[in-house]
Length: 161
Image: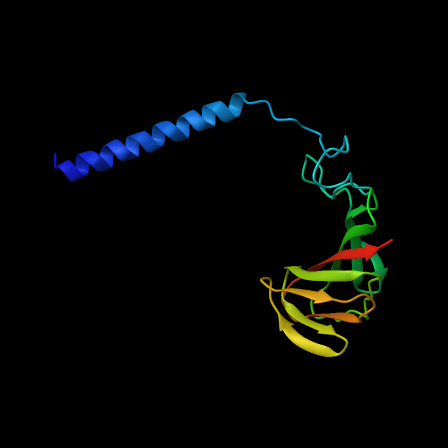
């Protein structure tokens, strides 16, 4: 066996051994759970439950807000600060255009599923899933679904109290 191959084999064996030790150690290290529910986590306790359940069904499904525009609140909190954080998702069927959506706070607008176009105050642009756009409070946002399936858009809204 060549010296280079022997060194590579020893290095690979050592890496596997270290990884195994880290995994074993990780299984036995107690991890505090429920910190956010006790008010000690990084984020405040959500005032609206998350949309998922253990069996994978949607507990917080989309509700029809206007004809062909559905929405749901994914996360919302007003706890312990001078601002409120809200994550709201909108669903738009294939080939539809939404009416103007106006948020009361500044928003990060993210395309979560599908494809289409986005218009902010009549400035329309092509939009893909890698792009997050900011909309100021009160700006008119229109969603245009140009794809072959449902379009889902998340507004992460930050507003002062």
